[in-house]
Length: 385
Image 1 (cartoon, rainbow, N blue to C red):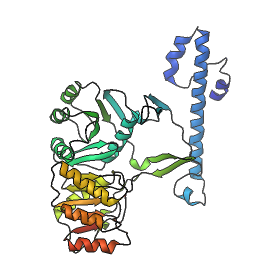
Image 2 (image 1 turned 135 degrees about the vertical axis):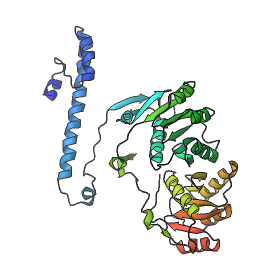
Image 3 (image 1 turned 60 degrees about the horizontal axis):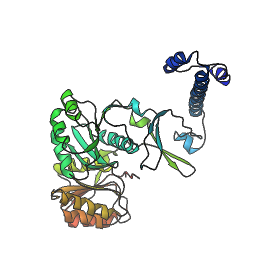
């Protein structure tokens, strides 16, 4: 009935969304305006019915047994996506690019104050939300261009902030801050001293909001309850189509992690290894993380050679005045050569965690043993492109 009425929109106004009731009432009696409104309402109907048809087709596709591997893996033979326009954006990654936001992003976030979100803000908020979801203890993460530049966990958010900020006091300028507990006045007083684009928290106290209210452009975001990560797919455009994959939601089976060196990690090293492994999963490849306890000390991201990521992380730690003596090093993918591990040992790292699986694993293990390092193989990698 909706489709039939929409086909006759030259004469009929068809309403499928209660939000349009007021517009119809306001336009009654003005035929010129009503004619334009009827076209918009008809478009809305066809968008709604096409979405309904796609939902039926997707459901039936899951019921049909198909012999190909993709169908068995849960990916349909035909992938279609229809999302409502949530908002226009001032521009894309750069001012000369046009952009818009589609979907239900604002079902998961509420903006309390500040300028409208930009394209880059939305990407950073998404990365920050995935990262903070790895931690149960009070945790603060600071991100820039989707990469964490400092992460800390502690008994309180304030202590966690000092750990995260100490990692890098330059990169957070214009960055994103995310926390996993209610953000109070004590932390707000610290954060207000630096220029920040977005702050994300499950809640803000009234005192914290009053402090941030003085920064009119600062965007405060409430992170609502998000759908289970296992239900989310990652979709990326490529030439001629899209790539679709399920999200990387696992750290691997920690109980199956294998110590491959002569020396076992100490209890303190284990804590650092697991912390660094969580953070490294969210850093662009090639990534190297130096950490100690529940604090990042140096982050090296996105280099073509893993040893260069290590050198950058060491340099960043030096710039921050942080010692790497007794630290751990985490690599999201295997060390293809021993050079990266040797660089970490020379910097002061005493333990390493990596997937393993290189044809030169024995060389890397030997280099670790020669330097008295403990090394853990996880058997799982976390490439992030």
